[in-house]
Length: 170
Image (cartoon, rainbow, N blue to C red; front, side, top):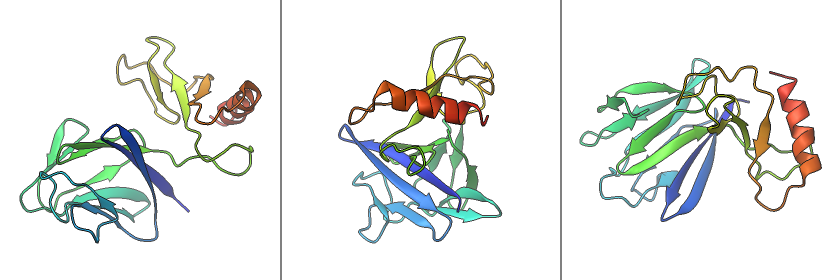
């Protein structure tokens, strides 16, 4: 089943919501929303993320407040945009980033693990699966180095297992 994750920070604390294709996820100030943001620049029901035609999309539900998409486009009321891993959008004053869901199961790691690759040209770190470096444009398709953030002390042997598993599939 296709899934994505959305990540954002509130007062320095990382928040994360995994979204699957089963039902739309709403973002807003209203208590009935799936992602509640207490920002006065966020509408009661500001946005929805949904799955349709084999991809995820964001839909601006707000009549008064836009969504800034990938720091380039403004989504006004009732406009939609396709979402993919690496995209970001701003709802009110909260920046949200689309990420891959966390790994679980097969490789024996806790679900708190995020895979990342390092650009061989400029050294910037990106979520695993991004096609090219947004800083210098270098293709990340052939990059074999996969690193993990270390929440909870993942040992180096686990990192090496993940690197071999994921890089061989690229």
